[in-house]
Image (cartoon, rainbow, N blue to C red; front, side):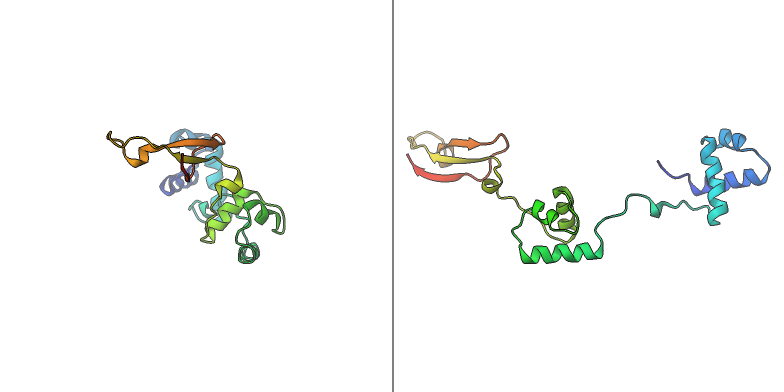
Length: 160
């Protein structure tokens, strides 16, 4: 939800000073009664009409200590999986969290398709006549593929 603009907040406070009720101000401004009351309460509590948007959102769990620990784990074993990094932290973290934190450290994680069991394919050269307009690349046909995802880097097995 967007914050009420500062100009409208100031107008709401002026209407309160003129003796208008919260219901009348809400009808005039187009905001609900609770929002109008909240503007007045926040002004009384903080002394300013500016919205407090800098404190919004969830706080990160990546503290300085965890950042240092993660950097040490990466330095010690750079080929560890995201799950291994998450398990070795001070408390368990998921792979998506580890991936996000590694990116914040300026690192990226590259999967190995064969090791991770993702889709990969092997290609074999199909010797045909080159008299037609097909290029050499057209003479490679898939020999087999595993998984249902996209095909990764083809492996040249040789000539048939």
